[in-house]
Length: 294
View (cartoon, rainbow, N blue to C red):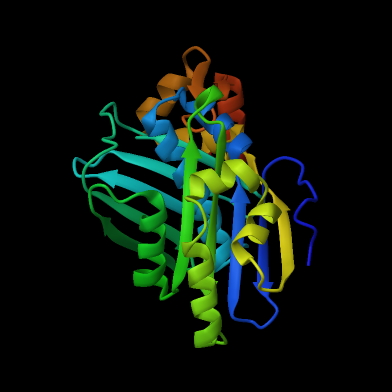
C-alpha cells in the first residue's frame, strides 16, 4: 500500500485495487489542469465549474475503461449548446465551451451526457444518457457507467470555486468487481456513506489522489496499481491547421495563396498560428507533388 501522505507533484490520477479483488478505485486531482483550461476559455463562472467537472469525469472514465484511449465527453443542453472535454492517453486534457457557436450553454435544466471513444477494432463508441435537471456530474458519471458500460460504481466529482475559477478540483470512481462479497460490499457502502460530503472530504483531508483513496478505502487493504501525471494540453499544430485549410473549396484556397498571412486561433488552447501563403503553398505541394509539377 502506498503512503497516502506521500505528495504527488502537480495533478495526478491514481488507480488502486483492494487486495481481495472486490473493488477498483480511480482518484484524480485536476486543479491545475482545469485552471489552465478555464484560462484558455476565459471562464471563471458557473459554466467554468461544470467544464472543470467534465474534464475530471473524462479523466476518470478514460482510466476506468481503457487508459490508452482518448475519451471525449460532451455535456449538451436542450438547445444544442455544449461543453466538451478531451482526455488524451498521454495525460493531456482540454476543454471547450460551446465550440462553433455563439449561443451560451445553459448550466441548468435537462442535459445529455455524450461519451465518444475509439474501440480496439477502430470502431467509434458513442453513447448518450439523459441527465435530469438538478443532477450533478457525480450522478451523471455513475448513470453513464451503469447504463452504457454495465459498471456498478460509486462516484464523486467536484470543482470548488476560487482563484482563477477554481481552488480545488477532483474526483473518484469506486468500481464494484465480480469478486466482491456481500459482506465487503456492505462494509464499503457503509463506510463511504458515512464520510463527510465529498467537497468537504476533498478540501479537508484528501487533496491528493493517494490521500483520497486512503480516505475512501478506510480499513480495507488495497494495492496501488498505477499513477500518472495530468496536465492541460492540446492536439492542435500548424500541420493540423494547414490540413484543415486545404479541405476548403479550391477558390477559397487560391484566394488565401494570393492574399496576406492568415491568423488562426485554436479554440481549445488559445494558441495563435500565422500561416503565410508561401508556407501553405509548400505544404500543399508536398502533400500533392503532382499539383506542384503542373
